[in-house]
Amino acid sequence: MGDLRDWLAEVERRGELKQIDGADWDLEIGYIQDRKVRGEDTSVLLFDNIKGYPSGYRLVTTALNTPGRTALTLNLPNGTKREVVETLRHRLPQWEASLHDFAPQRVETGPVLENVDSGENVDLLKFPAPKWHDLDGGRYIGTGCAVITSDPNTGQVNLGTYRIMVHDEKTAGLYISPGKHGRIHCEKYYAAGQPCPVAVSLGHHPLILAVAASSLRGSEYNWVGAIRGHPEAVIVEEVTGLPIPADSEIVLAGWCPPGKSRTEGPFGEWTGYYGSSSRQEPVMRVKSVLHRNDPILTARHEIRNKAFDFRSLMRSALLWKELETAGIPEVKGVWRYEQAGSRFFNVISIRQRYYGHARQTLHVAAQTTAGAYAGRWVVVVDEDIDPSNIDEVLWAMATRCQPATDIEFVHRSRSTPLDPLCFDKEKNYYTSLALVDACVPFEEKNNFPRATGAPPEYAEEVYTKWRHLFDG
Image (cartoon, rainbow, N blue to C red; front, side):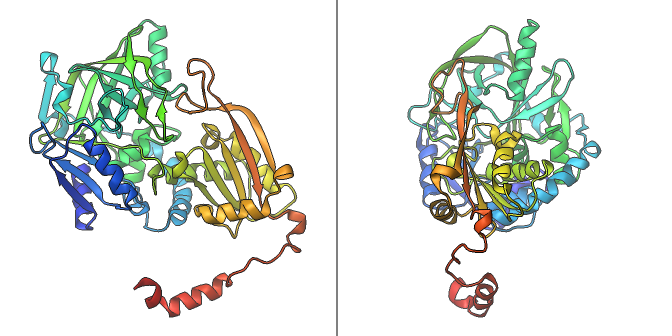
């Protein structure tokens, strides 16, 4: 599949696209999306004729809020959350093994060069950046974006999804949590007394968002190519020298100078809170704006208690992969709950094979790259529990976990300033992890009471026979 417009055409063909005309960028777009999602409307929302903006200056959101569309974007077969995670778990090492074959392909031109504004013509207010929440510090043009930076020492290019707040026509605030690659790159430039070059893709195929928002090892551009099956076409942007997607809808290019900051935030974050309050954060001085005719801004509005988050699929598969790489056998499923930001609450299903298997799984998960960052709960359950079904997980925790002996704690684990329980936002980003063994005790497996309910094979037989009753 080609660019964002090709992807939207396929979504429309499937009957999953809704166009909304006349909404106001000031809170109204955010409220409409929130109400739609909470009402279990899974459509992709395409806003046009936004108040104060010409027709054609559009904004698309909720692109990846179903397992099916996420699977479509990642070139995977459709299925339940658990099935897509399992498929993804097998594909990840295949894609990773082929990364060297899919380096980005440099091209001289592309749709993103249809309009190039520089110097006095730069105007970030040209685009319908929303104010999503009533207490946000400003309008956020970068939520479903890909921030492009490079390591000044190695030249390694990184794409990350960080938040971008509009300060005025020519400057933006850039928030990147400590330890993220984009922030490390900026800090290296600052240490050398140099400004950090930054390019931001604000509209693109959702695959770029899916990759930029995930913690993948290696070049994100190579990952995009490996997943698609062909290299990503990039243009070397003139101001920064950074490679930008040739098919992007909108790209900002400029510099973050050392020692320069402005108040950024707060912003309604994935935690379900206004993360970090207002802070002094780096300023991006935008020197060039490139965009297609009738550009489309891609956005992600963080919603508390959302029904699905595409990042849960990728993060679950990555945690599963790390567990197996560490030698944990018989992992049967992993789910990182979207209602907890796909980080705070993590569940792993295993088939117990030996004494200590469950505890080993918990402790390894707590130390993985995928599981340690901003984790709060790690729960291990037996293979009969679907880790993506919170009712089953809570039942296992209530009936198979003896709190006094089956819960352990890890202190001073890694977190983020966005964590509502990190109170010293300037220094300490620690959390604690609860490791919950909600498995039947291994030594009691043969004596534990049998759970009620039909055996799976018989349940499937009856379902097949009476499908018309259940699917009608």
